[in-house]
Amino acid sequence: MKLDLTEATLIGKNVSWMNLLSLDISMNSIGDEGCLGLSQNALWHLLQNLNLSQNDITDKGAFSLSQNTAWKQIEKINLERNRIGSSSVIDSLINN
Image (cartoon, rainbow, N blue to C red):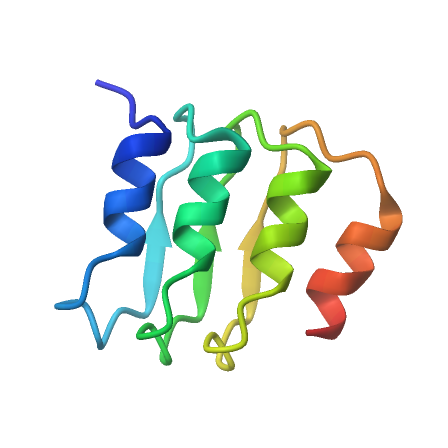
């Protein structure tokens, strides 16, 4: 079973994973809306690794991730094999 944007949004609303260090939901179908749902999580302060490879994410989804200010410990966001084309979006992920 693959996750879609609805499940990704529900994961983003999770309030019991406050000590979450790593989240791998690669090879699903969350798309940009699923990224938006995940990016709205403000409780995963310890999150270090986020694997979203192969999820049909475009610049719009990647940009929504870059707007999250709670994930201050993030070390790696894997967005390989998506449809991200703008280097400015990648720069905003790196700089935030």
